[in-house]
Length: 238
Image 1 (cartoon, one colour):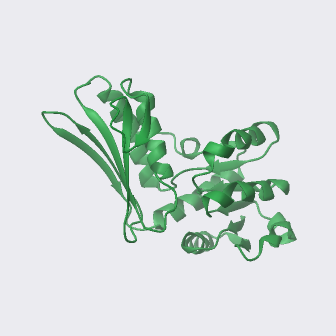
Image 2 (cartoon, helix red, strand yellow):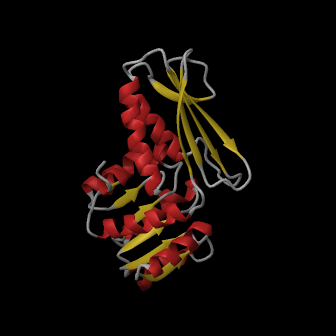
């Protein structure tokens, strides 16, 4: 498979190595200093572009790739609120393809399935309040993390006593999300159901970014054979 990389930071370099190890070809690498390469023949030849950049750059990168009919796999977060409707329209009406996930880790996909199932169970036990905490490295710009938002939305969808989520809220109808930035932490997400009697906790702690990078390459392999707006739930049927 021919892969283009959009963003060549730590994640981009790790994705490159895993893609090469799995027998794929990197045909184009685009970073902040060579944006003109979006119009190169090398980029246009890609089966899939894998995009990991900044929240403010992601949507523009999608448009540049879509212009040449290149499918995109993206782990950039923070753009959905402003541009989500337009991206959905382009994928449904214009034939574009975007595989987007707030987190590509296989472990997080499993954790997310456990989160949904646990929320359904806890819907029957209103004595438990729930909160969510996420911890990431100090370089992460957006907060709460895209993964935390996804997990929170899954809880809200399955827990009748929560109407939404918010950071540092005291409103009992809202799921509280606390975000912590320290050191070089790849990512920790913890969900707690607390009552007077006891505490139930589930947590996912990433050891490195390698799991995210492998998941992104697996997503690219999946995206090559599919189209439309795709996500982890399309690739893993939990």
